[in-house]
Length: 450
Image 1 (cartoon, rainbow, N blue to C red):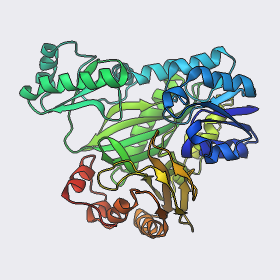
Image 2: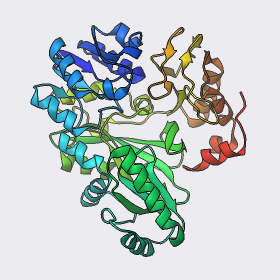
Image 3: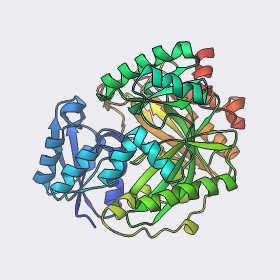
Image 4: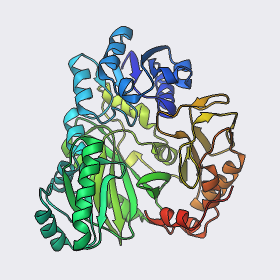
């Protein structure tokens, strides 16, 4: 097992990793920008190192500074959390070259799955169902028109190196295709330095279903059921739950085993999430995230498995000691992302938190690095915390979520809490009758109440 882990992240995920390390008896190193000197993970870590000024490119994305922090503190492993360098294959390679273990997948798997075109090719080879579309990138408008004619409109133009909805445009007709290609390429070039795009069939009313996997790099891998992340705004998830209200046990077993089998064949190492669009009983692969997800707590809640703990164990070379038969889903869990944002426009709302009171009681968990008096900086993601509730059934879970939301008090900044207080009373949400476009339509109808 590792002696000391450097946590190359900030906010709630840095604190989550720190807690797992402490429970494993592993010393911790927190890194921080000058803007995060008063962050909770910095206060609680065994050691801390300032790695640069507020901007992420000069601190949390600064590989030389992170490597220097490892050398100064003697850290023998790095946990990247999510975001920043979590899916940067070159970062993983550099650490390994310097004798520091990257707590995540093998660099080659990060690289394959980080390229959306190569990821789709790989998924097909491994027997994972994919959305109909181009076999690779489309190099010209003429090629794109041919592909679109074959799969039928509407089509989705997607950046090969994309994520978070950037470089993604819908073309509903041949007339719209040229504009969608131009815009997607421009966005992709500006965001990722790569303007490669490909085409997929656009599904009109899909749900977003993802399968959590764990592997030990030796050919052992399991799935831990699905999460339903269909409530999204501009391709950003705001509400996640497990299990999905719409997936049957038979469907779960089938798609789960398909994914787990693929991970065994790859000899995948660590935690990962294979994401699908789901429509009319069929699953269509869209991407794989080779890291821990923001929404991992709902899987932990219904399986009783500590995913961060497992990430660390297998990265240290220990075999996966969980079999598929060991994984039993119990109850229902819902997570809502409490962002420092306006509840309707999602405009960021950084600033000082003058009052912070989190809910408690049975089945209630809050993952957050915020505390009363803390100032949320304007330089990073606006996630302030995650409220996770668990109960025996989905109906009981929704009732518990209502109660917990009523107890949650945040003053000094705007948050998305008012949005969730409205959603938990909505008939469609109660029935589980929504798709990935539902929240956009809901927000367009009027401002959530407080």
